[in-house]
Amino acid sequence: MPAPPTTPPDSRRQIVLASQTVDYQLRRSRRRTIGLRIDQQGLRVSAPLRAPLYEIEKLIAEHGRWVLDKLTEWQERAPQPALTVGDGGVVFALGQALTVKISPAARAGWQLVDQQLQLRVPPGSNAAQVLEKALREHARQTFLARLAFYAPRLGVSPPPLRLSSARTRWGSCSQRGGIALNWRLVLMPLAVVDYVVCHELAHLREMNHSPRFWSVVEQLYPDWQAQRLELRRLGREIPVISC
Image (cartoon, rainbow, N blue to C red; front, top):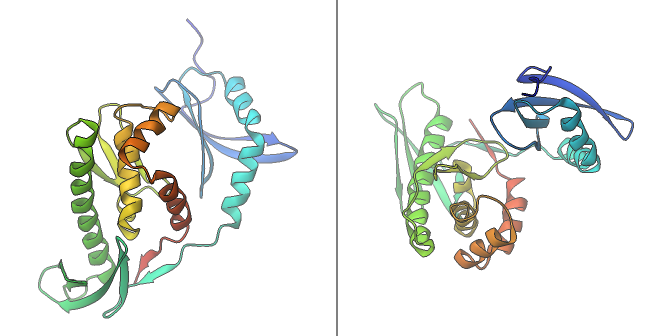
């Protein structure tokens, strides 16, 4: 039996890539492969519990140019714009311009009437929190409807849905068949939402990104390539909700 790793399950480490010292977060779990991920927190590495450190850092080094390029891209990325919540303001959801109407009320709530998003905000409450709750529920209703529309085309039942708040991941599909979708997708056009929905549904057939996987996506959503590019573009412009 191989010896257990000498590094703890979660640890901060450093590696030198092209003469540059790079910090990274190492997290071990019961996974089978080593994965690299870069976001606003820097380089994060996921590895099997017993993967030797030299194998982990060998993989990082093999992808060194990609790691450095992505880290530079994140450092140069402009901060997300702030969406100020106020009576009469405009929020874009699913490609529609919704005018925000804020009314005092004893209990928080919301209602979408035509193209007006009516928020009921109790005294002393945060309008931004009510808006986010409204958008999350609008997202849930929309995602459930789109899953119910596309799943039968794949010959499967609509899978369980979980809303995600991930900063950089728009969707995921678990080994058990559940799908998580980022609620912030509701701030994008419906065509982009449909691409992400079909992308995750395709994982019910192919839990990978092989050519067979993309052929399933093509079957479900022929315009996937254009909407994938749109997702990447709009993902950098999604506003942060503030008061």
